[in-house]
Image (cartoon, rainbow, N blue to C red; front, side, top):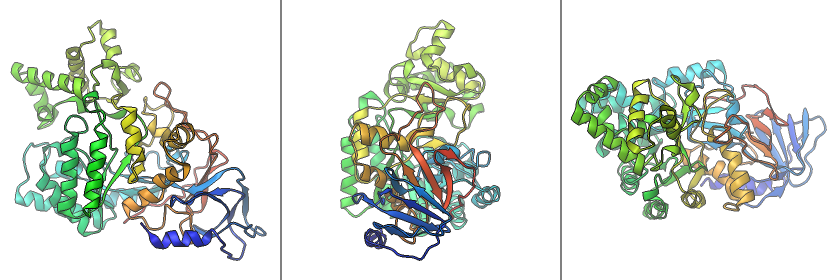
Length: 522
């Protein structure tokens, strides 16, 4: 933890007295500074992109460019979303769906994905101007695909050296670490030694490693163990990203995974967690496919389907996943989200599609429809397969940060997961105010200083004199997510002001495309 900033924050609770004028003064609000400390009433004054004063007594307002009365509201550091899918960033650089949640900084490139080469992408985003602060990870799947394609084999020594060089280059160009998606292709074809070799490169540069675990259902415990081993051998911070327990046969396993995290941390490792506050996941329909079936890409997959014995094995593998993993043993638990070739399926389920075809709602029917979906170009879906008790247990863990796993979006595009619009307000409303799972101070810590500490971001995540002026003002009585699984395209309530690098981006609930964000190169 950043002790210097904590001490500075405590000192500021007493007084800070820079001379006016300021650009913005927030008056009458209740400050939750992000450290987990108790709230206190204070004025907050901003000049340029920095917090210059924060005082329990009134800050001088004369000559200030703008004074904003936030009486009755919470003033907190801007939220930091360390698992964000930024594929549409160059099309939606304003980042409205993030900013309206109170998010001021996002970390993209999770799950082994993301852009290549890094510098060209970051330069393009910077030239457009971004509405939120953007940091990136370099993705293992992206690198492996560049070097090995979709081949199911270990890299040669020369190929591994090339992959290490790509990680080193991306870190030098601004990436904050390495991400893997070992559940996805081609990452699923890699072994621990390969991942350790790449993670070591990130660690040598001070970067982190975030992992979409190899399994989140029946193989969850082994997957957590694998991630911990990677962290031990590569000697760097590990984030178990969007940590969850998938499928009814595995529900309750969070008790053991969290104990594993505690044990590793007690032994001197730095194992961290992030999580979204929902009992449904979101990813491509290919998650239901046995990985071996997709080796070599779609053309090889289609050739296997033409061989009866292999086709039977593929169907059996999909049925297994529908029963034990992302399918939840019920075709109604798989809800289509983005289906370019049949938009009328968006928001409907595998069960609905079977009914439309007049087919029995069996797992075998589901498997055949999954194959058809992939033949027609693939689809994304929402999988209602987690248990609320695991969600709450993981959320309570002191090392769990809140992160959306959400994609940038604008109203009308597909049928997205509600987390794309509502992750952070949902925690503040449902899990703090309504259920009491977290205190408000701890929830804010999990959205601010904790993710900043996970990433090693030193100037964000705490309200303190001299810190970057990334700030959210929200109403603790009304803040709430409005996006639902039935009607997802809805912005949240109760997020009144969002200030990014000292510029107001959400003004009394109204979004302003100010493009005040920055590209954060490590």
